[in-house]
Length: 222
Image 1 (cartoon, rainbow, N blue to C red):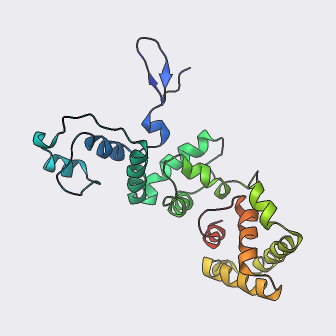
Image 2: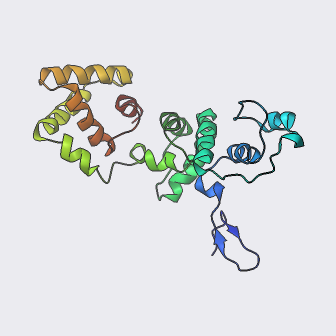
Image 3: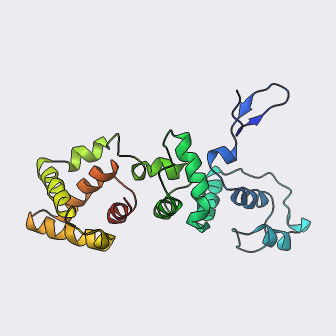
């Protein structure tokens, strides 16, 4: 059966994914398309439909060909994504998790909104919320091999295990990013391990990745 999220050609029955499926916000696409072959006569780029309507004039429509710049389209989508209230993206995140085979039923709207808040400044497209933040919804199944080769040693493994024991003593009411960072620094100092060596190993253990939001913010949410 054809995926209902895809466009279907009436002549051939072929299906093709579009901008919605790729994770573009409608307002971002509209804003981008409006500036193909037209400009407002100033430096404005990010504009609502109302603002575009206000500024539009046929006199400023160009007569030459235009370049369809995918990088620019991505930039517009990033801008609009970052403007969204995290709660507004929760339904989209739930759909993305389901599409990846991750059960979203066990996560509250509040948890998912906090997950969005951690991730939305780092992604370009909506599906990346579930992809890049997979560790927020299930334990890592894979670990960044390059980061492991560089940062995961017998010394850092002992530190992460020791830190886990220290974290188990943190009271629920004190489970904040600031407190978790303080405990981390104390344990690193006690073990004579530089934070610059310890922190990447902790991130790898928790997320499986070499980059992402602040690791203590991630720990606080988890």
